[in-house]
Amino acid sequence: MAEPVEEARSWLGWLQVGVVVLVVLVGIYFARAPQVPEYDDTPVRGAEAPTVTVLQPTAGAQSLTVSLTGGVDAGERVRVQPGSSGQVVEVSPSLRSGGTFRAGETLLRIDPTDFELRLDRARGNLDAAQGRLRKQRDKGAYDSAQFRRANPGQDVPPSVARLGPIQRFEGRVRAMEADVKLAESRLADTRVSMPFNGTVIIASVAVGERVGPGPVATVFRTGDVEVRAPIAAGDLAYLDDPRGRAATVWAGGRRFDAVVTQQSPVLAPKTRLAALFLDFAEGADELPMPGTFARVTIRGPAFDNAFLLPDTAHRTDDSVWIVRDGKLERVVPRTLGRTDEGWVVAAFDAGEGVVVGAVPDEQPGLAVAAVAAGDR
Image 1 (spheres, rainbow, N blue to C red):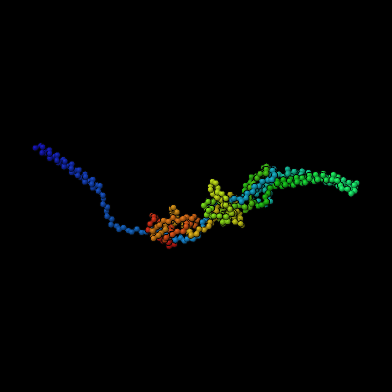
Image 2: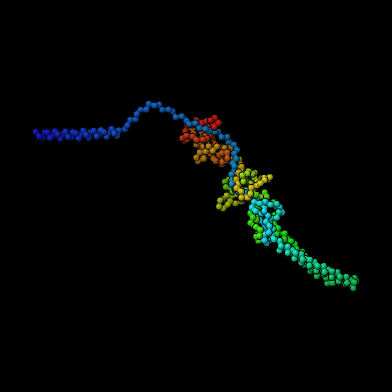
């Protein structure tokens, strides 16, 4: 009787194991089964096309303004240098950086004592030579008269008339006269002045200093200033021949009218830039000093059939959005340049208008509602 009971218990154990395995498998299955989303009975609204602002550009002639930076410089720098060497005994208050002077004004005076003595000696030598010349002439006249009295009708020989000594002393007198003029010139050189009204750029001399014939200051003629402005080769090519073009210069907090007078014949070896030189318009007063920073604008030749677009129309890669058939379309116009007023491009087919301002989620083909710039 024991064997049937043990066999029944064995089958019962296996049955329990099978039930447990089945429950585990069913649990795994339902755990990995996809979930069915709940049904949302909220109706879906239709997406509205964003509104964009457009403008319809007008093709016409557009000029660019070339903007440059440079500096004011003296047209011609003149060095002030004494003609004589010596100790400085007087310096004009005008002889300083930025000082102005009048034509003929004494800027510097060197001690004239030595030069006055040299002039006195030269004049004394001249007086002595003239006295000897008069003596020879008097002797020649006396001897000639005696010869004619003793030899009536005969020519007076040159030796009797003392023509040789007279010519020799005449030469000495001329040499002494030249020495006097030279001494007078050296004495005049102790007073230094300029023959024009001018302004001092730099000066380096003081009373008591010994100076030689080298320069002691650099000046320029009043009004003789110009503007030098480096320019890129591309801008120079656009201006073509810039000489004679009107320009505007801002320097020293003031605005001046100017004109381009010349350009450098070669490019600077390091910067590869050319240079323009501009003269201020006639009649301008209180011109800036050399060394003053200058900002220059030059209006160039006009481009025909061009658009002037606002900066708000510009997109990456120099592109613009236009609206065609109610959708965005990207266009890359040919850039001609930029001005203070905006972006100058070659004219193109603008469709229903060029988009200005930001567009949400902008992309080609996006449906938009175009509104003219003046209607918003």
